[in-house]
Length: 361
Image (cartoon, rainbow, N blue to C red; front, side, top):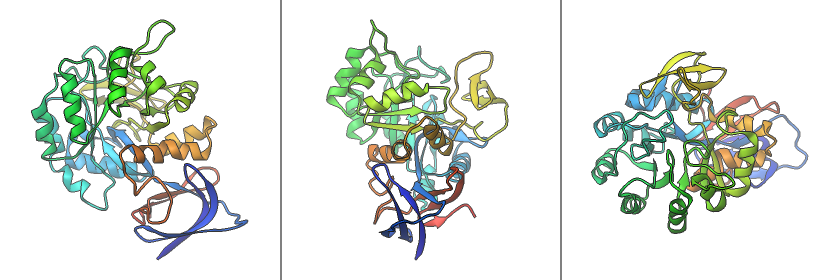
């Protein structure tokens, strides 16, 4: 049995305590007037991640294993490797054998996030121009090999009404993104289903004083949405507005393979990109191409934006876990899995515990 003492921070409380644990948390004892420099928070949950440290989800099994480990070593104890828009054969080849990683208790992969290919060709962002109409066979055949947890799609695409119903009956979380849908279409789905939103504000029809789109519906009636908090995709003020409006708002990295690498020219989804000062753009363009941060940096960014520690924990762990009904993570509580992160008072990453084992040395 292991134990650790420090200031324990959950989304809804903070207190000094001692955690007694093995793979699961056995007991938590509260301590009065305990004084040290240890902060303990739940492990990060990242539901939208394309890559890191030179590795990309679309490069297959070994690359997914390497990128997931890179993010684990930065505190992400639960991860959804995320695809980008491509043809069925390429996606299936990419995801072949990933179930071996998902079933490995030493791996942080929970399933996959399928971003595209059923998105609007006129709102691609950095996605390849390989969009297609909804395909039931596409989904059924991928589900034979891997668990799809989330799919990003555009609701205005032809045939989407029945397709969304099909996906939800398969227990796949549907998120709207890379979409030009109007407010009416979006809101009709929100009234019927528990729909989420992919990288809120980015790659979606917006909101103005005279025209309402996907963003308007999300802010007015959305219950869940992901948001990139790298300081470039969305302003601090816009993040705070979203936090007030959407109860289940959660941060994602949306990181690409260039995350963790030095500035320079790289490739993402077959497109030449430039990484400079943690900003990634398509070459010869100002179009953002994913992010270059991890969830640990995201957490620190939220604190720097004056979010409370509890709010930062809520946005980097608890809300995402709750969204996927992962009831054994996202909270430091008795009987939960021992996935937690130890920080010092300067927010330096000290230790990472995954399934009760310290994995950083």
